[in-house]
Length: 104
Image (cartoon, helix red, strand yellow):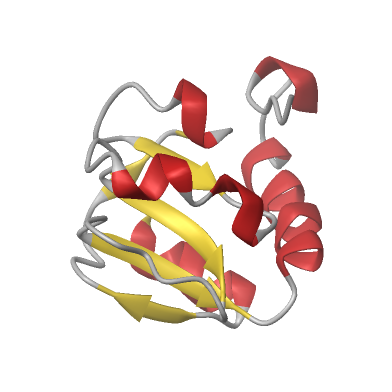
C-alpha cells in the first residue's frame, strides 16, 4: 500500500487533494471500485469516467480537467507514469503486473 502523496512524489506529479489516502491498486477508470483504487487516464479520451463523479483518486495528463474527482495527480507524461506505477506497485510483490493493472 502507498499513499497518494508517495505516489505523486514517485511520478514527479502535482498532487491535488488528500495525500494521506491509501492506494492499493492502479486500474483503468472503468474498473475503479473503491476509495483505495487509483484510476490512470492516459489521454483525454477517458475523461467521461471523470465526469461521472464516482472516482475518488486519479492520475491524469496535465491538460485534462479532473472534473468532479476529489483527489488527483497531474503528470506531464502519462505513459511514463504508467511505467513508474508498474515499478512502484510491483516492487515487493510476487504477482505480475496484469494482476493489478488493466487498461483495456
